[in-house]
Length: 280
View 1 (cartoon, rainbow, N blue to C red):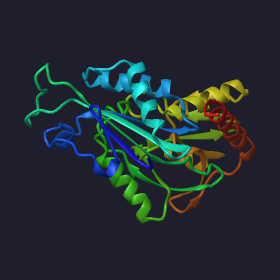
View 2 (view 1 turned 180 degrees about the vertical axis):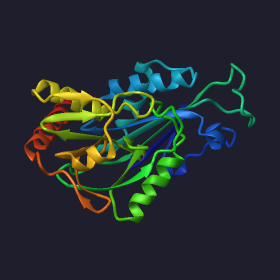
View 3 (view 1 turned 60 degrees about the vertical axis):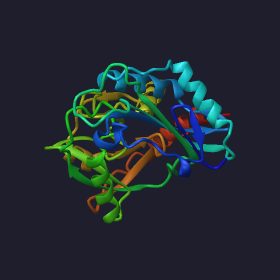
């Protein structure tokens, strides 16, 4: 199949799938999600994504009615039905289906599992990105990968309307993350990235990049950095499951980075090696 959807055990072409209007996702975005890539029948970093998925659900007091192995089994069953070798894999869990009320539904209401798959490839990491910025007015639980993404949608639209590839959030002078990516910098040979507190999503790609840096003698400093530090950085790196490790060349129309290309290439090469090894 070219696309495939799943809802609580029902399979079908994504375009033909339907869900009940009383699923709480329709009114409150009440749920959590994950997304990654698969290649050659193997899902990249699935264990890491499942760990974050269960953590996000726990922080929202949603009990996942499956084990990690059960979700992995469903994902791989679906992946085997796909025609293409490179697939975008997405899954989410909502609190359940019940009459609309702000309070949680009764305890016997079972959460709903949604999954979809479609052809998808990772971005070209050699392509330099153009970025813009926006004040971060989101709520203070950005570490939870929730379905409440309207501020991210508005930021992503701002970036597109300006001919940019991504939008960087900042709270006052402090850079947090991007609309749908993490952002880090390199300065004087040090990889600097915002700590995994409640202001950012703990990115899986970010985590792997930190591991790569430590394995290859690149110092890592997990600390907040300012917008000005970002503008003055030797490199600005945007990372996500689909962008991998993409350097930026411009922010708000001003040239940035491109001063430590050898370090960027090293990180990119090691990350692609890891991806290719796990999906070989």
